[in-house]
Length: 204
Image 1 (cartoon, rainbow, N blue to C red):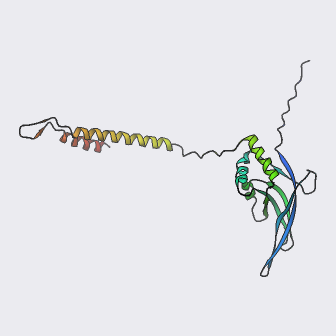
Image 2: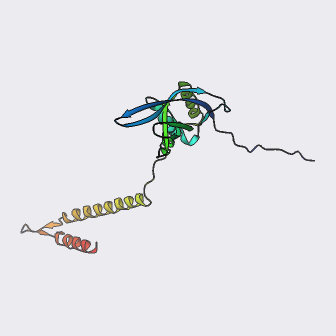
Image 3: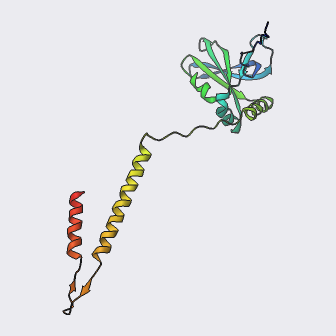
């Protein structure tokens, strides 16, 4: 009986850190209108089974956004969530964490809200290690329109041919074969050149 080899085809899970948030509600009043907004009061490491804990997951295709975030003056952690209740007595239910400003902006609609807070230095080092392990993500330059380069090359070729032909015509027009006793030029190509140019222009 042959040896049976079992190959593990499961992909490794992306790196995660679980965090627990402390929210602070700030009430304000402008004229007769009252409103409430929320801020992140504290951020704590947590276990996956902890109440209210959320995973912060890193993805390789977001490395460019992570680098942009870390390169800013104040790296931020973005928290997505939903506002519940009335404007005066409302609450905020966080449901996601991200370090990508692009991802966070996609959640900003009428029913959702995005909060942010400074990214702790320990998490900054964690993200730096992730980028160093997988390499920087360089954005590919946008390609030009199809055929644009060939059109420019053909235009340059046509211009070069026309310039060369004009130079030859000017050289031929300036050539003088001989001078007669009366001082008049003989064998001059002036008439021939004029006719040649007219013919070329008509052909073009």
